[in-house]
Length: 96
Image (cartoon, rainbow, N blue to C red; front, side, top):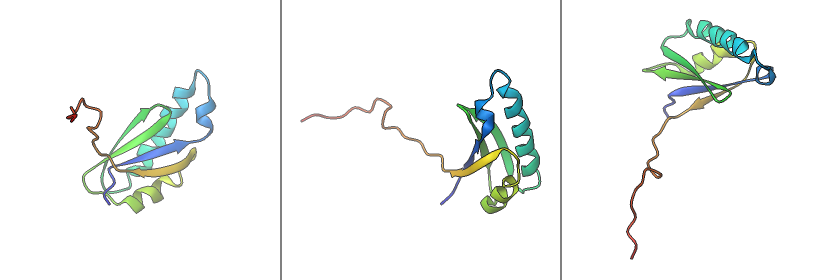
């Protein structure tokens, strides 16, 4: 199965107040630094209290997860397979 991204779950950063973005920025920097040692192209983005790392082209999933395992603040790493779902795109159904 091909994975296209990694979902990074973090711990106590999520309970920070108005300065939460500072901690998320720092964690994003550490993630970028850890993945710089792994072969592949990675793009990070933050979305709804999670950090996603999109992986472009070929990359070694095990090596990527191994590198991220030692980043302080990460409590979970989930491989993500991106698919398109057009079931809600206004598809018309025939009624008989």
